[in-house]
Length: 470
Image (cartoon, rainbow, N blue to C red; front, side):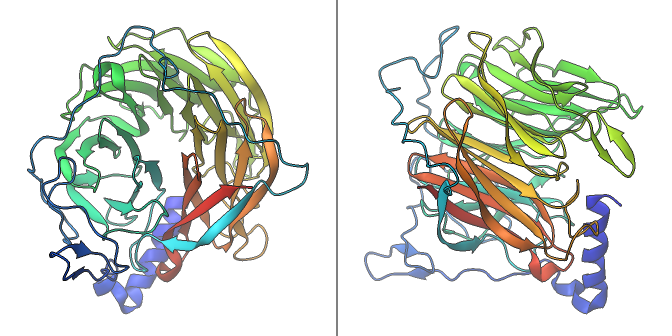
């Protein structure tokens, strides 16, 4: 039985037990209006931004927020020269590159307690997290209603406001990207623009036929790049397509076919924006592949990043559909893939068409069918990888492999060329089902968010945890 079916049956059982009237109700954090000039503060006393600020917009405690018209978002993104790299210019600087950890020592320490990002009756979905320069944005979907929710967090990964959702934001997969003072949100065939606080600034545009995928800022087109699966052939196969999208959420041309692989399975492609180009990464027969998308919509030649062996379950061997993830890191693409025994990492420079490091087998994990997270910080030169760990390809507890509540979310610290640093740490353990995670990076550390897709709604949640390198 697949993951979706297992979770759906469990959720239906809870509702059938008499909880259906409250299956998606949860507590709204209190907010007060202080005496110091009417400043609005959240339940912890943190001031909320003033309505009408250039990138703030009116704030609301409504769970479903309407289209917000608070004036245009600031637009100070300069034009990008052909071939321009993220490291070009005086602001790039050098890595601080902390010294390596002694072998066997934990790479990192957990900072504070895990923070719940949804309520106990909101069914979660695989989350995404992004640093916006002032705080964090997290997006996830409600598993049963398919609504997509956004949560604004402060620098310490604490919620600043209740979750928000918008009409038209629904789907089975969520990807969040940040650039030019706004978020781009991909939600399985739909793309919308949010401001820093989750307010809708461009209504969701439908791109029929495109499915699960990821988004990235594509500065050269003053917009975004999305890479997604496309199964319009209807024959059980799937292609990978890439599309350029403007800051009005309107496509800048038709989707370009990046790759076609018969029986592509359920693999989700990734995309990385590197100023003058975007790089699409996907798993196909033979391993992890890449191809460059240019501002005019043309594509470079496909290339091979690393080989991964087919993973095997009781249903047979699968050559495609490995869980993969990729992130931008200065001028490079960092890609990770799981094959059912290990997580492999490679660092690639698309400007020089050169592998800078790897492939490395950086972690052991039998789990292959769950979302991983990857993010790097250009100042420190450190890369963070989060990955679910269970006793089988879909997680140990649910599939009957091992004791109940045996799944984990683990974190691995990597150096600038992908080499492991220190020993991995367990971010969360004793989970009924570690169904996916994501990681964001700053120069002071990382934030990991994960989906614990337990069988019962009270433990079916989205959590966040700060992680700091030692």
